[in-house]
Length: 251
Image (cartoon, rainbow, N blue to C red):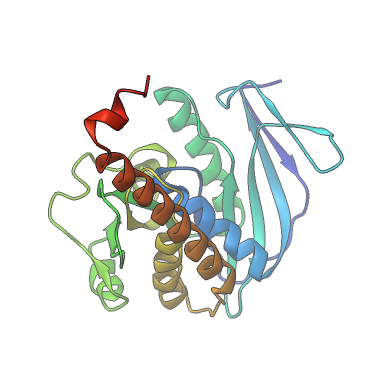
C-alpha cells in the first residue's frame, strides 16, 4: 500500500460543514465525545484513511472479520450544520507521521468545504476532578470571546506541555492553511477513561456549533467509573490500614 491511502465511501453535499476531531488521547476524552456524536445522530461513513504510520495490527468485528487500523470520517446530520467527525483507534507512531497524516486529514476536510474545526481532547491534572473545566486554544484570537461565552477557559501557558498529536497539528497546520480551528480540552485525571470530561467538552461544543445532544449514556458511564474509582480507593484505604503483622504475610 501507499504511505497513506484514502478510501471513498460516499460524497454527500454538506451544509456549512464543521470538522470535529476525536482521536485517542488523554482520558480518551476526545474519542468518547466523537463516538457519542456518532451514536446520537444520523451519520454515514464517508472516508477511511489507512497509513503505514498506524500500528501494524488489525481488529476484529463482531463476525471475527479482520479490519486494518484506520481513521474514519463520518458525515453527521446535527441540525442546522453538518458535522464531519474524524475518529479512529490510533494516532501516528512517529513525529513525521503525525504531520503527514494530519495534512491528509486537512485535505479531506477541505474537499468537503470545511473552513472551521474543533479538536477535542483532555488535559491531565494528575488527580480526580469532580467538575471538569474545559480549556481552549485557538488559531484565531477573534474566537476567544465567543468560546469564553460558552464557558471555555483560556489560561496563560496552559496546557504546560503544549498540545501534541493530531489535535495540536490541526491548530498548527490548519491555521497555516487558513482553517479556523479551536481545541477544546476537558480536565481529566490522566489515568482513567473519563466520560464526565467528554460530556463537559460536548456541552461546550454544542453551544459553539449550535446543536442539541442527549447525555444519558455518557452519564451512565460516568457513574460506572465513579463506582470503579470508589472500589479502588476503598482497597487502597484498606491496605494503608493494615498492621505490620498483616503485611509480613504479603510478598
